[in-house]
Image 1 (tube, rainbow, N blue to C red):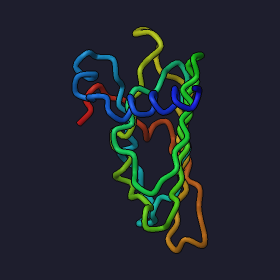
Image 2 (image 1 turned 120 degrees about the horizontal axis):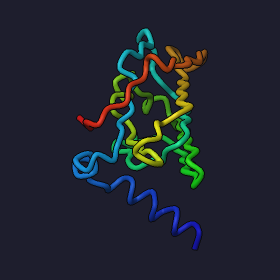
Image 3 (image 1 turned 90 degrees about the vertical axis):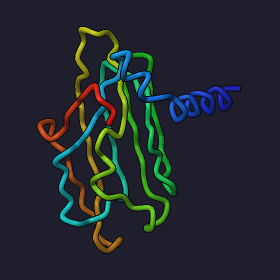
Image 4 (image 1 turned 180 degrees about the vertical axis):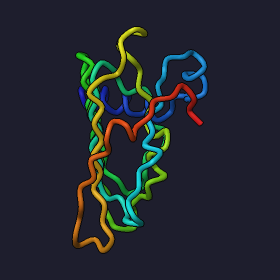
Length: 142
């Protein structure tokens, strides 16, 4: 029963109409617009945030394993990793890639942290911590 509930929640996230949610002013879209991997491909990422919940993840990459923690306390974590090298992502994936909802309108989303793992040759990996100043939240999904 618990597995069925998880599947229903994930399906709801994937099928939600992001334009309707954005019009309601409920969603803050997270981007890392200045992310520069120097041409390396992204094979994993870990996003953490507090005082919010995940409302939409509109572009789940094919060939990726994703784990979403959407705790009732407002703690959020999305971890992902490519199952095969061909599924590796470019930095452009991180433009408006997740929609977050604040716990209350007057409480800002806090403790944002994004780390990505990038590689050029799929042998050597480097971890890139995206600084808070390099992330943006906007009400517009596109």
